[in-house]
Image 1 (cartoon, rainbow, N blue to C red):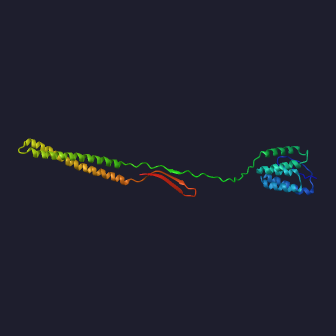
Image 2 (cartoon, rainbow, N blue to C red):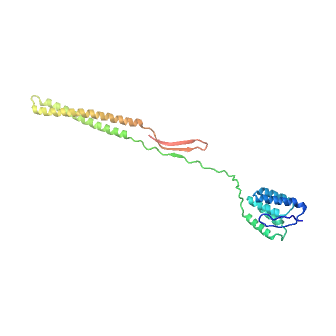
Image 3 (cartoon, rainbow, N blue to C red):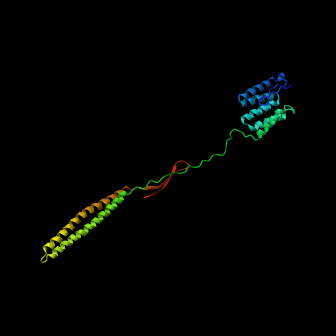
Length: 251
């Protein structure tokens, strides 16, 4: 006698005769269907398998396949759909056999939804070197001011020398003009011109000397502030840890 079973899940209902030894199988069928309705597919599979061990009713196999399909286990779902088709009597439940056949075709193109680990390690490239932009060139304003000041001072000292030479030359001319006699007006004019040149030579010499010394001081100050400037600096991480610093310097 066959067990009275309701065709579970999507197959509809089917009625079979029940026998006392098959009561446990019927209870397991109902238990499996409740687990399935609660989306407890692992428990549903266990109940359906236990029921099939008591009564080899093909509907158990179909329900097991349905639960495996819900879990995304395509291989086991395909296996139990085919098992159902092998065990269902010929000509019995043709609609259900047609549905099972279509599920088998669907499982042939099914992909397991559970992720599979990739044994290949992921190699991450080393991070690119971190480049530091070169510092802007330092201004040398003091140096150029010092050079200009020193140049002006040198010119003034040169002019002072020329005026001093003219003053000395005028003094020698005065001495020559008064031997044995001299013209007073001419002597006074030449004497005034010589004194003027001497005064100018003194002023220009003093100003030129100060300008020259100030220019030299500014140049020395600028040179004392000069530091090696990094023309290019790069920081690259090392594979074993730490970092390497490379660069070019201009002085």
